[in-house]
Image 1 (cartoon, rainbow, N blue to C red):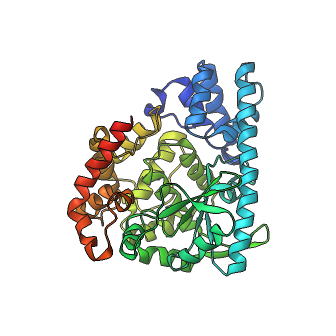
Image 2: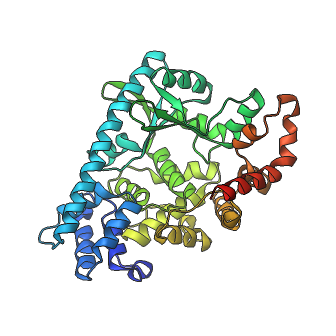
Image 3: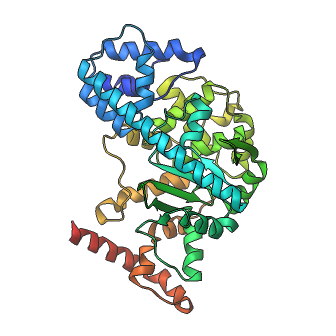
Length: 400
C-alpha cells in the first residue's frame, strides 16, 4: 500500500489495525499483506492493538486478515484473544441472521417492501461471509408510509420500542419523523436491537423516494428484499460513515473492499451527489481510501477531489484516531464539540440552513415526555427548546 504521512506518524498498533480493518480482494492482497508485515516488524503493542480492534469493531475482519499472512509472529495471548473475539463476532452474526430472516418473512407476508442496510447482508455481498462484519443490531428501511404497519409487524414478533420511546401526539410524531430517521426496537427474548429506518440521515424525502425507485429486487434466504444500486450503495456507505465522522475504521474498510472489488459505480454516484449537493460526502470518503489504504481514485472529473476544505478531512481523521468514541450527548461540556460537528455536517450538506441544523441540535423526544403539551400548544416547544435542553443537561449532571 502507498505510505501516507498521516498514517506513518501513528503507532505500529494503530497502523496494524488500519491494515487489518478490511479484507483486500486478490488484486490488493499482496499490498495489504505488506502493510501488515511492516506494522508487525515495527513492534506493535498487542494489548493496544486488541483494544483498537474492539474500538473499531473489526475483530473477525482483523483475524481473517492476519490469518492469511504466512509466517507472521503473533504472541500467543494475542492470538487467543483474537480467535475468541472473532468467534464471538461470528456467533452474534448468526443470531442476527436468524432474527433478520424472521423479520423479513413477516414483512413479506404483510406485503411491506424492505431494504436491509449494512449488517450481515452487506457482509455477504462484500466478503461472501456473513460473519466478518461486526454488528450491534439489525438495520432495515421501509417507506415512510409503511412505518406504522412495520412497527405493528415488529411488535407482533416480540420486538418492542426501546426505553427512549414513548407515545406521541400527531404533531409530536410529525416532528419526530422530520428530525430523526430511525427508531430502535429491542427483542424481548434475545435482547437484540433493531433499527427501523424510513430515510438515510442526510436524505430529503425526494431523494429517498428516488433511491427506492431505483432499488433492485433481490432475495436473501428466499425472502424478497430491495437492494441498492452500485451508485446508491457508494453514496450510502460514504453518507453513513460521514454522518458519524468516520470514527470507526470498519466503515472505511467497507468502502475500501467495495471499491477495490469494483462493486461501486462512482460516476453515477457523483451525478446523484451533485443533484443533492452531497459531493463532499463522496470526496471525504474517497480521500480516506487514499490516506488509509493508498487506493487509487476512480476516474471522476478533475475537480471531484480538489478544493475540499481541510477541516472536512481533519475532523474524521481526529475522530478515527481518538481512543474514545465521540460523545454526542447534550450536556454542557460537549456543546462546543457538538457545534463543531454541526459545522462539519453542515459543510457536507450545504443545502441545510443553520436554522435547520440548530433545530436538529436541540430536538429531543425527551421534551415531549418532560413537557407533554397537547397539539394545540405544540408551537410552544419551539421557544422552549433551549430551556428544555438546559433542563436535560441539569438532570444528567445531577445523576452523574
